[in-house]
Amino acid sequence: MAPNLQRQRGAIAIMVALALLVLLSLVGLIVDGGLAYMTKARLNAAVDSAALAAARAVTIGDNQAEQRASAQAAASRFFAANIPQGYLLSKPELLGTDVTFDGGMVTIDVRAEAPMPVSLMQMTGVKTMAPGASAQTIRRDLDMAFVVDTSGSLKDVQAQVRTSAKSFLNKFNVTQDRVSLIHFASGAEVDNAINHSARGFNRTSMLRKIDGFNFEGGTSSIEGMWHARSQLNSISAENRSTLRVIVFFSDGAPTSFGATVALKYPNDCPLVGKNKGAGVIDMTRNGLYRLDVSENILLDQRCTLANNPAVSLPAWYDAHNVDDDTAQREFRIVTSTPRVVTASISNGATLKDNVDRAARNLAEAAAAKARDEGIFVFTLGMGGSLRDRTGTDNEKGEDVLKCMANVADGPSRCFNPAKPVGMYCYAATEADLTPCFSRLASAILRIAK
Image 1 (cartoon, rainbow, N blue to C red):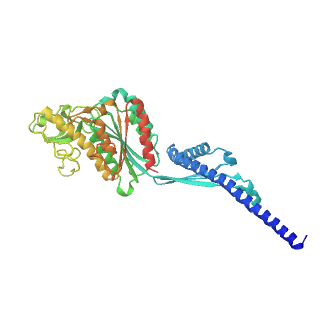
Image 2: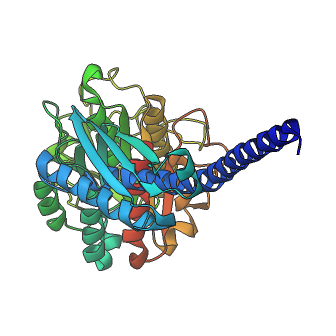
Image 3: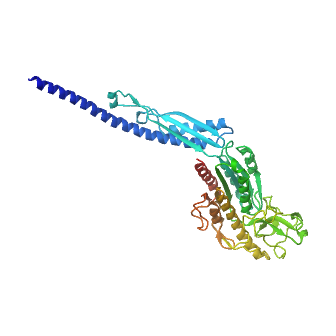
């Protein structure tokens, strides 16, 4: 055989060998790289779920050490549940869950990797691959006013209301979140004021206050809303949290509101002052009741409103500024929209109509004002009566709650997508109450991330 031919055959053999090596390397890259890609995708999902679980669990505990431990334990559980050992021959490992507290912000960083062997790529000297993934969740600081209806219509389900309200509070962070507790019926009371000087809230005290609620009286929604907004706005602008929320629970349409009225016959109403007094006017009762007591407690002597020519409704909601006719001009009582309200309460029928309309107007107006200030309003309604058409204008009570929350399926006159859009949850029965509160809490925690 000619020497040139032998040399050509040798060169071809070398080229074929090199080509096979390159081909096998490419096949190995495709096979092993594909497995690594699928492992990394699964690892990313596991790390994301671990970070979210940690953000939810960081509320558990009475101090930062306990909260950090709760977050890390939740991250570990969810990571293991979402990528098992041996997945595509890998060995997933959670490298760390770092929890950083900064004022009212909590930052959670999760890191993981999944070392795995390679097959054909070993021919190139690569023995293993180690896909890695990381995720970060930032839980924003929160200021929240929690408003609970304690009217008499809830007396038969008061045990479930207490249980559900306490379960809701347990979902928030006692060292990072600021929370105020308010309850209302005929009047309203601030059970726990929001913390101005430091972050956190006294959950133990709030749970005890909820256990002591007395369910009696009417539904003066504006009083609960007024105090909720007042609590949030009492924090100086520079110290407010980035997320501000009102959570409002009720089982009925508003039936009353606070106002000051001029009285020519002060002897008929000795506890409200000489010539003018503030109190709650209820459409179902011809009298003036205490603003600062939630239960249906009459004054020593009921103030006669209807058939009293000296009495009329003020033009503006002024219940909390008895001595200053100009200080509180935020919410109109006498108005032509969205419901027509006149100043007259000259007889029982007129009083009922005007108070019914004004009570609904004021609850919606207070919620709209809160949204103007960047506050989210979440509402929860319970019971079939909310879906009955009642009142002067034959309206559904839950439509007021939907307007307050600014949700798309509420009355079109209320919805404004340019303002904070909250959430409305309907609990048909007491059994639906805790799930509804859980949905609201989850929604708040989602927008806090």
